[in-house]
Each structure stands twice: as C-alpha cells, then as structure tokens.
Image (cartoon, rainbow, N blue to C red):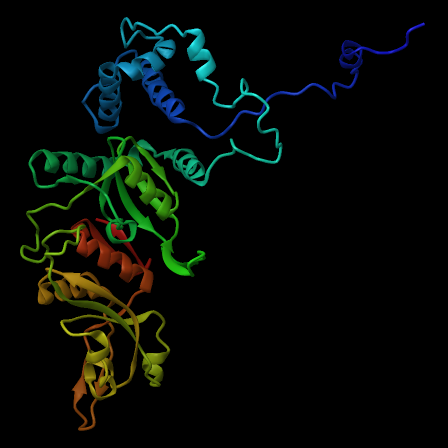
Length: 401
C-alpha cells in the first residue's frame, strides 16, 4: 500500500488554514498610481455634483486644469481610460500588447534565468526618495471649507498677480536658500503656501564629514483645499523634482525695500546683516525677562558692531550674545529695521536705564518675543508677505490679519 502523500494532499490537508495567505499591498505608489488617484478625484467630484468641475472656484479650478491635461495627453488617456466611468476622455485607441511586450514588461525579473538567486538582495524595496514621495502624498488632509476661505483668497490673488506679471514662475534650486515661510510654490501645477515650520538645525552624518542642515515639520496649504505637515526637506525635494518657485510681487507696500524675494544672484549686493542678540546683563530687571532679544540691522559685521556693547545704552550697558545673523541683499537698511520694529511694537521692552551721569535712557530696540517667531518674521519680511500678518502678543505668535 502506497502511503506517500503528494503535494496536493499536503496542501489539501490544511485544516487550520496555515497555508492561506494574502499578498500584502504595497503602500508605495508609482507615477501611474498617482495619476489614477488624481483622475479618481475628478470622478468623485462628478459622482457628488453630477457635473464636471468648472472655474467658478479655486478648489474646482485645480480639478478642471487636471482634466484638461488628461484630455490632451495621449499617454495619460491610455492609462486612465479603464477608470473613465463618466466617459470624460472619449474614445481612446488602446495598445494591444505583443508577446515581446509581455516578456519585456518583467519588472520583477520573473522570466529571467537563475543568474542571481540570492534571497538576501532586496532589489525591489522602496528607496528613500520613494518613501519621501509617499510621505508627501499620505500626509495631505482636507481643510474645512470655512477654514480654507482665507487661503483661497490668497491663492486667487497669486493667480491674478501671475497673470498680470507681478509674480513670475521660476525654477527652484537650493532648499535652504529658497524655501521660506510665507512664500508660494507649485508642485505638479498645484499652488502651495508654506505657512509655518518649526525649523531647527540638525547634524547630518556623511562619509566626508558631518554637516549641519535645517529640518523640521511644516504646515503647507495647497490650493485644492488640503494641507500637509510633511518635513521641510521632503517638501523642498518635491518642489525640486516636480515644481516651481513663485516669486514675490513687484509692486510692494514698502517700495524700495525689496528687490527680489527668493533668488540671490551673483549681481546682488549685500547691504548688511539683520542680527538677533541676547543680553548678558546681570541687572535682575533685565536678566529675569524671558525671551528678551535685541533685533537690529548693521551695515558692518555684527561682531565689529557689538564689541563695545557694555559701553552703549542701546546694548543695555552690558555685553551681548549673538544669537543669529542673516545676510541681507539689495535692501534699504533703515526701512528694513523700521519694519521689524513696527511689527513687534506691542512687544517692545519698556524699561528705564540710567547712564554714568544719571541720565535716563529708554532703549527701543529690545523686544520680548520668542526667537523662533523672530526667525519667522524675518523670512516673511524678506519674502514680502509680512503685510498679511500681525503679532499676537498674548499668544506669542504671528497670525493672519
């Protein structure tokens, strides 16, 4: 009697379902998947509204622009036609695969010989840039309609300013130089606004030596009514990969203060430094004040400017610590410093000091403001979006007017 079991017997004798398995779906989306997701947004809109998107609002305009692109792009139409349940794309002649196509379309190498049978080589795991792309898509969430209204108006103004030539669309290079809070950018034709970011410097280990770079979570608003809290550098890489920089407007409220908000060229002239200082005073009326900083502008180096600080009233007759210094190009020094002081006027230090002759002095360049807020405001000024904000003294933060 033959008691040997066949493979069918073994697989059939699995009462506990131990051999049952379901393939895990990958979370990493390729370009076709993202294209289909974008088309499904249009399908969902039509399902809900029983009509195609129009140019009546910015949220619909984005869908309309995408639909127009799909209709004009033959390669996109062939990918999307199987999902075209509303017949938006019309007749599309689909390519019929040949035997050669089938053998050539073997991304996983299933039809290749056994040249490489090493099971420890992971050739098809997501690469870091793929994960960054997924992070970018996954973190976008919908804003409530009421919350989006103030941003929608901003996006409409930017579109108008682009049409009028007040803003320009330029290539985006150098994340740390050109990715700033309060500025507008574009990814895949969609406008975005970098509203805020909790940035800090991090040490980045490399074979050639450690480097310091800026990183942190952002709050980024998109014109299609979504927002993201993706990482600062991930956002920058996405703009570099498939986006553009939107320059600031040319007709400024502070005429003559700004030349070009985002781009520093060889022709630009450095006019000085914005600096942030902290007092080393031992006077308890000074040393006990949290978040007390001097904000100023110098046409000479900051170190040179503060070397005699303890002899000058403007430095509270004490040595100071340099917290930060920012190079400034093509700006009028007096107007720039004045704008900073006006913005933080409600947080200005109110204290009287007396010099060696007994004369009363009231410094007006010291402000009780958290340093990260000062950094935000400096970027907003240099990118000309400060006019949209005001300082909330009680909340110790900036807010849209």
